[in-house]
Image (cartoon, rainbow over the protein chains, first blue to last red):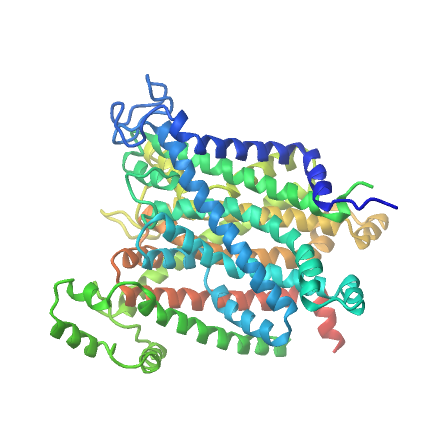
Length: 284
Length: 320
């Protein structure tokens, strides 16, 4: 009797072979670790002035320089990473979970539910995603939760649409029909067949979205709609660096570089996942 | 073809209806009492009642919506709570400025994106391809507002060859050249991240098409390479490129808020931001409504153009 091959382990093995994806994953985990360990490894208190205002990088004590209030940029980068990562990752995961519910209900639940749900989502598609996020964040009180809620709401239509399309596809597959003919209950079909086969492209999409939502979250903070000073956040740091852009460009440059690197990394991971989960690309 | 356009137009109507309902509800979804925003937290109950009656807030939601929508359809977008005159008068001139910025950005994004993707595809997997795609990858992950600030730092503050903010110079400004000079940095900043996406999709689309059998047939028949790339491949790669072009236009419309804020460009995005911060809900509603309207129309046009250009729909339509 042949052993059943675990698809997850297969995917991981496939993913592992691509050096770019592995490097990207390692980088993301490294940044996450740094942010989690910020209280322990941060050279200075991110709220305290420890050097001259706008001190350039490589001055004693401030490897990346100091900001307009004399606070250590490196420390603020480490602490800010927590906020930036959370605002990228958490709402995306939550939106994915909710979208799976909505999308599968729409894709599998029959014409009426499909039409009702999709018409409602169509209304949200009439607005650019960034605009939805800005307006939602704008009418709520500025805070990290506001940013997360705004991104969560803005994302749902997009992920739900993908789930629905995939579920519609899966619904017509022969193994679903076979299961039904074999007498499986509707809930068994949904959980054992529809859900697992719908998840793969959704996970790829969501991973790529994490990077983009991190950028969006930082953008909302840049506008002052999210985390408030003196809390450290990469987008907020860029905003604070605006006033001293000419004298102290490092205050603006470093947080931006961090955002680009982490967003890039998530993009690579998403690409790697897509290639790893794609049955056509598997060797053997 | 005409039938498709008609159907598409008709399907936009319920969407616009839903959009208007959602935008209308903004005022009521915002936490906090409207009367506090307008009169301050210390206002007397009588003053609050008076304002509520004047704004019609004491009537049922449906009546309020009906009043609002009939006015909107006549062009009255309400009165700004901050500026005390008509939202339409405040917002429409700024929309023109935003359109100038958005169209310029879109043009740059399409041209840069298409050509870089095309070049990368035609020299696929070689150094040109890697460099171009690497640059596009980085640009696509770059925050728009940060890119703008970096450009300002180099071109405006350090090298001083372009202005940092505004649409025209404060002194002696206003000519076309002046506006163009002010337009360059914001348009480029807006365009580059979108160009990156267009570039990637162009390249991917081209590569996929170039694998197809009909391309191999053309090549074996001796059709010159340039002609293959330009004629045969383009036609079939076009739908995907057009679709992403339309999507990016939407992304540009959203991102325009950031560009306008960073560059102090006097457009609707900047006004939207100011109105959000100033809690000027009627203005926010007006701007959001107009942007949504523009977005729906753009998507409609993209769908129609796509249907027209896509060889598969054309054959399907021709067969009818």
